[in-house]
Image (cartoon, rainbow, N blue to C red; front, side, top):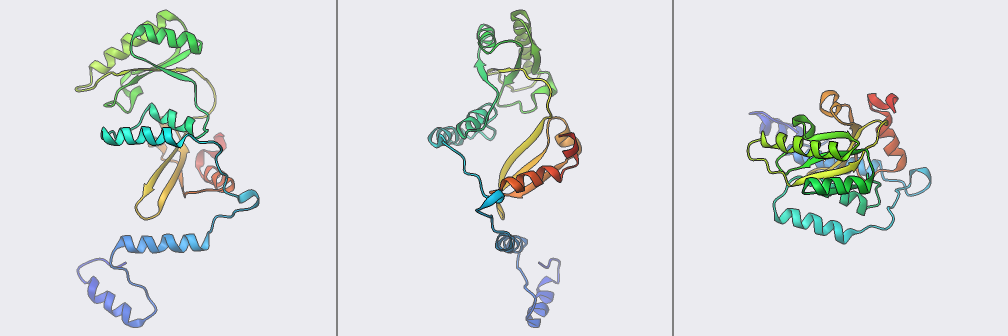
Length: 231
């Protein structure tokens, strides 16, 4: 791909040589690279490199969630992402949504202490940054206190609305990671893996793959990050 004020002149010179492909745009060049990659790296369908098919999936429920959010022009799913993961057979932490302090206590008792409390607000993405996440809540009194503190934290954000609080079981230990996906305009579905939590932006220690990936490719994504040794 050639750019600059003399790109047409240089492109014509290269075309005349007959053995160099000249692309009119970067998008066309990247699309060709994708096709070449797919041709040289076809996903294996046998043995340890086989693409693993998910089991029973609740696709109708997922479609309903996505359609509802598209209609409301919601750009971040937040808590509903857990429902989508569960619908595709991915284990998630048991949780519940409370819209009052009393419901928060009820959900906590049902899940069993200790619990975690996280604000539900479409205007707040990084909840812990404003103190809207409360960890290791062990009693009814602490749950009430946590609710009030979260409500106060939300009130400091102009235009933010508190729709409720997500109540989840509290787990300690382990290593937090990020696993995401996006649809790239040239390469299609792309997966991202890396160290999670506050370290995602700080270290930017991530790896990428074009979906679908085999179990072997998934392991290689993990191994090529600097944080692999932590795991």
